[in-house]
Length: 410
Image: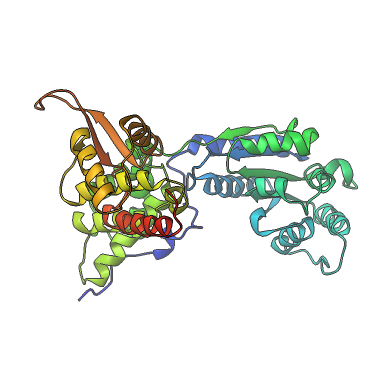
């Protein structure tokens, strides 16, 4: 029986945890903090609007962590100079209108401002007045900012008033006291801003693009979480390498630190449940597999034709049977057999068949490579993308095929 468990601090693995230092993207955090601090310490106050954005379709790449870490550092550095910078964080996806956004900001400042039933503009004026009276500053993170731009309940005028508050509601002493750090999913937010509030978009000072994490960066992040949250004898570098190689963008993964951290946490929880006092490679692989199973994009699979699903299933079946790669000839033969004998559909011709394979490869569901030495003749080899669990994928694909066949869709 375990006396103490594998964890020494489970909070380290929480999604909202902010580490005491950033071992990855430290330079970006310092550059962002410097922008706010230079203006603040020069006596010009806070009025900057800067933005962090990611890549299309990428999540868990550290945008929110970087934003929260940066704002915390600005507040700490300002305090050493005798200045008070209050922090506020709002996930705009869960705040459908300006009133809700301002209510959340006010709550985090701790100021005695009456928000219930008050017009949004009055709340904003009261916030500006309180900052002046207390001689405080406020730095606000607006996460999922793109949802504010697309919301029909937030007018362009409201957005402009909020982000350019020092112009619309100037402080009594003329010192600008509210700055913003916008966090958006990807670069499209800038295009939306140009359409909705071009005056603000043109004045964004620093636009920071964050790419997906590479495997070495994920290893560094996992190493820090393991050092802070796990007992020293629980893990070894090879366990972290295994996870970072699965999720690293340069190794074919999606570059998500969030999913890598969850996989490590799951592996430790599995070990605890089994009464083990340390990790093992088999448990790490199992955790990765289960984590991937939960993240299979079913909507992507539902958009495939029955024939693409049959091909994908056959490749997954080969993987499950211990075949690392399946050659094009054998795959074609199995596709024809399965189409006629199992699914009762006519197999597509070679041209369309190769279009299907190309599509599956472009979606990242299947890997392809030319055959090398040791094989007779030249052919193409296929395998299921390594991050996908074959057994779970087959289960999902079977359900989708069955639903499509019932509805008569090919």
